[in-house]
Length: 55
Image 1 (tube, rainbow, N blue to C red):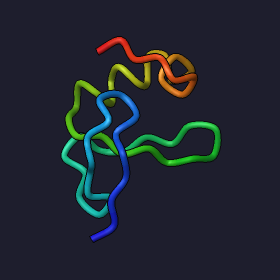
Image 2: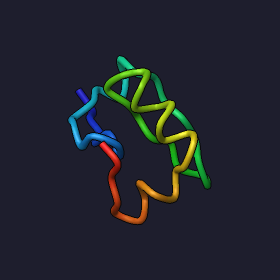
Image 3: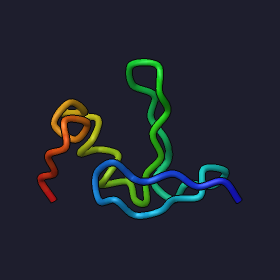
Image 4: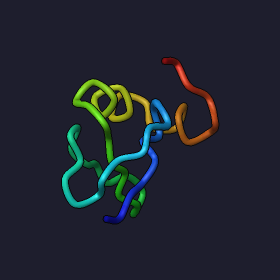
């Protein structure tokens, strides 16, 4: 099983079946543990990629 780290909450996510779906930003696909994490990321991806987390 391939995994990735959810950029919002830092949980490990199965990339083949991410519970929160995936989202492509700036040429990279990000995977999410829940719908809410994906929505938060989509609203302001740069804040999460810069190392800040609002959760």
